[in-house]
Each structure stands twice: as structure tokens, then as C-alpha cells.
Length: 435
Image (cartoon, rainbow, N blue to C red; front, side, top):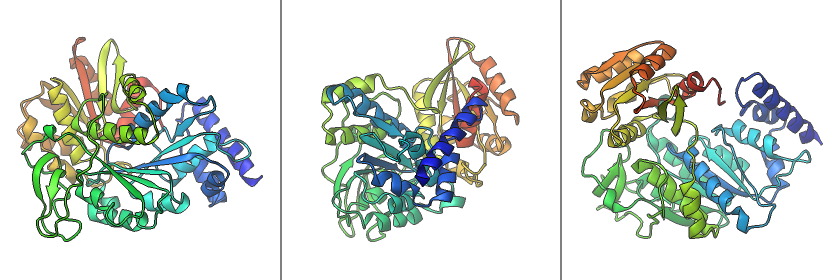
């Protein structure tokens, strides 16, 4: 009965937030519910038979979650009519975001009438979530890159937390791990769970080492890894010559279709497809669902503004920024808006921009506008990378208008923002808040 009032209160907060265009109210309902009842998440899940899918990693969580939901919902016509899926769609991936999602999708008697719940999880929060959600049905771990060093620390710190948390999982849980990331693949070594691996096709290899290479040492013995091929950052076909720890042999690498551009999205897609296959979704349904997939907000999302096309590529750390630049270069981009913020969701330390391989793209783009809270830091970085065609504007709205004016009607403006900048620039373009 107590949780009944928490659910009603939370839903009222969401309605008020949406009515006044203040956002979706995706965290406050859960924050209040957990403040009043710290066992709220456990209470709801205890009353439900929903299959739980957790998705963790530095990059790609929101896209992978939406890919999985798209595939599962597309296949529902072959299943009973009551079959339903929900996710923490707004990307609120801390404990309060998970609780909010349960508030919005529970019945008033504190029960979930769904078959699947998909939760993307902040990498630092995964151990806390596993304390609340004991032995979920599936855990997908996508990758581990340096991100918000002032908040998370180095990747080894997160990897150790993950290892300690996952070690206690039982065989009920299926672990789906990125075989190409040594730190992530190592999590399967001591797990009691059923472990499966995904990666990408070795035909995508590159021989070029990147500055944003974060895990070049063996997680088992500490010796330097040897790479037969590198796909990006530290992801590739690796082996430790000292202790024999090596890239898993049996790895899922081939989706029937890839709906989004970029090597990094091949990983997201392969992870989603592998999970779908484990849930007996047919190959036909998988391919057809991927062909109608629409990207999540800010993740290669396409907007039409004044008859011009705008595409947003969330770029929040060296690995994702490098992949965004490489992807839009392959799309023959001319017009670019770079937005660098240093707010809490982004991390206060922006020194990571010096690990982005801007030098590889110094002559690639025609019109570049730089803006954001740390616009001048990013402008200085581009100057050292010998970029010529860029201008720096502190005001985001003004910079967005300038970048749009420079974009011809048959061209696309590509926006590469950090997380808070993505929310801000999207609100400027659409007039609506996301969170």
C-alpha cells in the first residue's frame, strides 16, 4: 500500500514536468521513491516475473538498449498479445533513473505487466544495481574506456568493481561480453554465469594505434598485450604472450543488417542481435526490425531544421570522439559544429580532448564552428592540430545559428557535442527538453 502512494506521486511529478515542458521527469520520481523506501526497486521486482536485461559500458548503452527493444517489439506479433517491453528510455541510468522507470511502468499494486525490462546502467553504478537486482537474466557489457576521470578514475578501477560484483552472480544470469575489449572479456574468466561473447568482423581491422588506447595490458598478469589487429582504441584481436590469456575463440560477429554508421555501432548491433537470438527471435524478424530502426536522441539522430538536415553524434570521450570524426569523414561531411561542456554529466576535466586524434582530420572539413562552456579550450586544441577553417563562439545558440547558415540546403550539419551539450543543443533546435 505504501508503494502505491509513491507510484501515484511519481506519476504526478512526470505529468507536471511534461505539462510545463520541463523535461520528462525521468529521475525525480525515483529519487523520491528511494528516499522514502530504499527497497522500492526490490519490492517492485519481487512482485513481477519480468525478464531483466542490464546494459553497461562506457559507450553505446542507449543505442544498444533501443536496438534490443526494437527487435523484441517487432517480433511480438508472433507471440501472445500481452507480451510487452519497456526500458529507461530517457537514458537516466543511475539508481534513481531505474526506480523512476519502475514508477512509470508499474501498476498501482506495484507489479510489472511486462515480459522484458531493459535497463542501461551507468558503468560506476553497475555494482549498486546488482545489489538491488539480484541475478538478472542478462547482462551485456559493451566496452570500457576512459570517461570522466575526475568522477570514475582510470578504467582499472571500474573493471575491478565490475569483477567483484559479477563474481557473485549465479548461473541464472547470462553474461554477454565484448570479446575485443580485454578488460571486458576477462570478466568471463571467473564468472559462474553462462558467458557468451560478441565482437566485430576482423575484416574491419586497422593497423594504426590511437592515442585513446586505454587497456593495452593484460588484466590477468599485467604484461603488455600483443595485437594481431586493432579495430579502434584498444579493441581488437589480442593475446598475452606471458600468461596465455587470449581473445575468446567463439565470438558472434555478424548481424544480418547494420542500421547505423560507424565501427562502434557494429558492436552495439552485434550485442543486440546476439541477445535476440538467445531469446529465440527469428533471423527474419531481426533483419526486418533493424531495417526500420530509428536512432535514439543524440545518437546519430537526424533532425530537419529550416529544410536542412542536422545529425547529432554524441561525443563524450576520446574513443567516441575519434569514432564520430572517422564516421562523418567517411560520410564526406563539410559542416561541423563541435560543442564542449564541462558540467557534471560531462566531467569537469576536459584534458581528454588532447587524446582525440584531431590531427588526422585537419584538412577534412570545410566549415567548423566551435562552442560550449569550454569553447576556447577546444579552439586551442584545433589550432595545435593545424585546423584552418574554424571559428569559435562562446554562445551556443549563436554558434548553432551560424553553423546552420553556413550549411547549404543539400548538405548536412554534423554536431558533435558532449552529453550536457547534446541536451542543450537539441533543445535549441527542437524547443523541447529530454530529461
